[in-house]
Image (cartoon, rainbow, N blue to C red):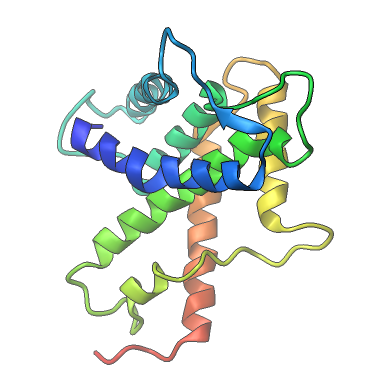
Length: 200
């Protein structure tokens, strides 16, 4: 990422999602390691994952061909989960919801990337298959219906388990990118069902 884009990611995706979580869980705070800021740590990990993904896809380290939004979002999610920018105020106490805080932060930040890139794609485009893309990506994200607990929480749990395995590359960013692609597809289809086709 270039610096302006990274600043946008911090301002649009990570910080708002983090502040929302901090408002929900009073036992959390941003990590304040004096040797390296949480934002710098997330970016360092993200850059390494991004370089690895480009190498796996046989893309040049830099160039005109960029990673699609699902892979960018997945790389960012993994970086957040590994960096753990949200930490407990008291190491001896952590509420059940706060236990999944970094996974929640990773998911919400990833979804913000998808929405932001989706709105960029929609700019200047009147409609997609008869539907207004700007309207679709402006709607709250629609997840698949799920019993027992919300789909979001199932993803938080899955992400936590992936990291808790403590094996190298246990969080597969390519797999998670596909999950994000399918979630976006579900969201778009759900919004299409809710709306009348836009005028051509």
